[in-house]
Length: 306
Ligand code: GRG
Image: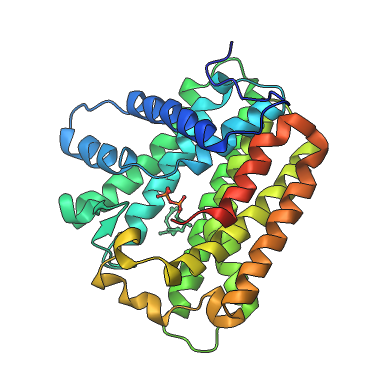
């Protein structure tokens, strides 16, 4: 049995809570093993502090799920799954820095620069980014090199100016602006949020050797859930209490940020998020039982409370 066998008994409804808990445990253990502390200890401790600080582990879980959907195993995709979380974590460390969002708390814990210092936090982010690529190349087993080349190329694109970095720079440019259009807001979030989610979904399938048609289909699924995810995030920013979200006074800038509820209103934002989730599910429904985790994760995006 593969370590992360999915529950696909048709007589029972899919238990997403149990699935996510089991997958989170697998991912946590792999992340812990991936980055031992060595000299110079301070930088490894700083990298581990944020990498092991909790979070939903959505990106690695999606990567493992699509690898299995496409006929691969958890073991084949785990180094890529960990790399995705390393990159996500580094983007959060940098996003929290005084030069960016200036946050004191993340995932209910002090941010990296508050515990270590700004210089170490920048370096911890850089270290995680570089290590993510090294980890895929060094640790992946039983996957042809040409598939890994494709994964690495997609990951590089998702992180750089065509992805997260590009989305973040437009987001920073828009800070305080009153005339942000829906096109600009979509640009920000398809780059800042959806790009890495898409790479998470697609890379698992590539590792397993999925056809180009399946990769395209999964890409459409992930773009839809990526945007829905951000719309829900914006809605939750308004509805959830500051304490639940681990926010501080430093996050006041949020009040000046363009959001979907500001542009569309709450009702329309919720409606659009639900439409996107339905769109995502319709893309993968043809995979039947094998797509149960992806279907349930899509539903979870609109149902989540944090
Ligand atoms: C990537 C080179 C490089 C630099 C970073 C700072 C930056 C450039 C980009 C910002 C990216 C960013 C913070 C996007 C927001 C993504 C997002 C929706 C985060 C929340 O994700 P969850 O809810 O968080 O999955 P958890 O804590 O559960 O992992």
